[in-house]
Image (tube, rainbow, N blue to C red; front, top):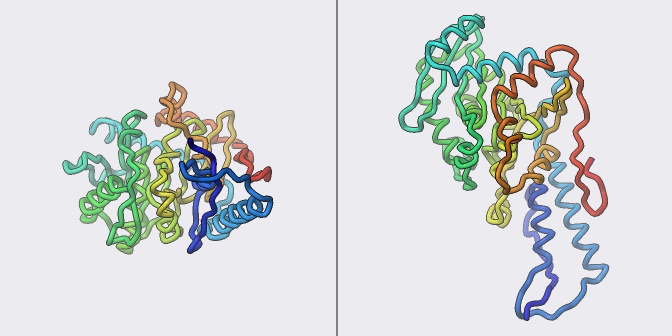
Length: 338
């Protein structure tokens, strides 16, 4: 007969953990085992659990890398990058027409056979832009996301293996076409956004001047250590409220055991519609992922991930955008994170 038993956990070292792991750790305290006597927890024991959990959250807040401070968002600039991200889905002739209309000069475009990643490099007024194609297909995006983080010896951090190998391929291919003393802007949608972030890491390590990275519907690419190491990257992640791709990969028990947890980088801009948006980063940004479920994405989620949806919402923010506070609506021991 199985009974409920309470156990304690000892932390041999302090490491940053996300809120998803807090919930998992809380559940670990209640373990179902066959050889255990039923004993209710004492008040002292429960206080110890609460204090340990709160200390963990506090360390998470204090040790999360501080992101660059942003003023009022430049939605005209965000629209420029969103348009270039959308252009990656065009035919070669359509791409040339669109870039010409925007005053951009196409320098190079390629589809890499090893990874089937497509991207282009354009130039306008001394600024180089790299735009990487992703996927508008939410099902494909979810299938392409695995959980395993692997150490990249070149960058010295753990990364999603698929995004890392794709970014390496783009980096090797694009280097001959880059002007080293000209600023580089990087953009991409969905999986292309994830590749864009890792590519920026390689470019920074290669001493290329990164002026800006703006991604749309981008999934996570690295863990807390990787985020800390590259916290200086000028990254803005634009998401829609119902797009679930930025909330994945989800947290797995194995990652929690190894204290190896996916973590988002940069400032997050949440497009909420009706000319409103919210900003968040770090802990609050990760809290959004606690609302992710394993249910089949519905039509609302499918539409929310499409680049056309991003463009429509960004268009609505070109004049008189209204920033609203982001509310996580999550409490720990009755205390609101907000």
